[in-house]
Image (cartoon, rainbow, N blue to C red; front, side, top):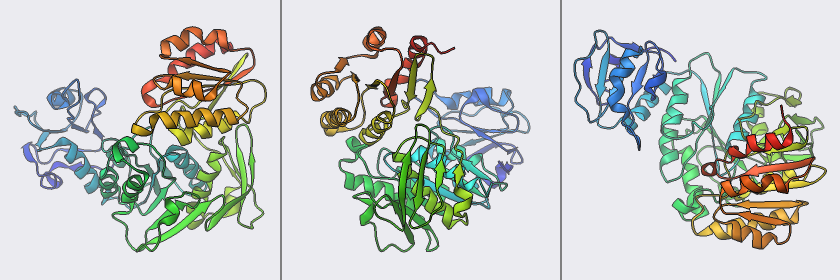
Length: 448
């Protein structure tokens, strides 16, 4: 991060300044435990603690500036500064907006109901062949996380790929205001967050907020196979489509391996090889291909792309007696069906351990039934349903299905259900914490 002085931002944040206007910072944190020298600490009020009360602790650990709300500001240590604002949530967005305007780089925003992280990882692998590229870390894709990603940037980067998530209207609008993306990618419009948004039409409107600050030179890349996105037309900026059946760029000659995918594009003969598993990632890959070609890369540059995958997304873990597919970071109907498709590629006995998919509202029961029905259409030998919709999934799957109401019940019995050389998929929404299965399965599988 480039250095910023308090005197340059106090008025922009609508803040009351206490202490030195000359105080500067070159990093931003919302956790007082990890602040560094010459950093800015922003106090955030959470469910169990109020970060605003920790600004003096942050100063003691090296922070030079603090942004707080709704507290009395005492004596400020010499050379340091406190900025008191009406809302620290708003302040972090406003500060990131200000800092973004100082950066001389291009930003690519990625959103969609599923596939955001994989698309980010694939595009990072492609563009890194020619450019210095930053990408969102972990799940820093909301109104607190995205600003922290902005603060991690400087002018040494050519491009930044930023993931943008949401669960309600105007969230992506706020993120787009901060990031000011030059290019945006929307992967698909599914059922994620339909509990809050009511319909897929409303989800489309919310995802399209990523273009709210576009100019005529901006580029929107869309999934041409998506029922809702293919209707997006006649906008005051450029639109390109990528897909398996429809688009400006169409993936052909698809090949799915256990740990990679391959395809050609349009009538080109060059094979694009991506070191990431899953047929669904061909769709993500063709969107990334469209962006990469627009940014000057050629097919020969994209012939073999190594990808640094984010954790708990299709992680393949081979053990002495089991093979584990760890895809438990999050789940919705589309991503769970894609994971089942991937499991179907493996030889031998296949086991799917599927947990609750959250935030589906009135669609929840039918969505869980649809996942079980999809699993039944594949060559899955054992379907293990865990969570509150266990009954819906088991009754739909029928024989060779087992249900458990809680993780604890499943953990107790899972050893009795598995056999040597099984391939096991674990998949559920974040709130199920299915990564708890990993040490259990590693013990059963004989991993050192």
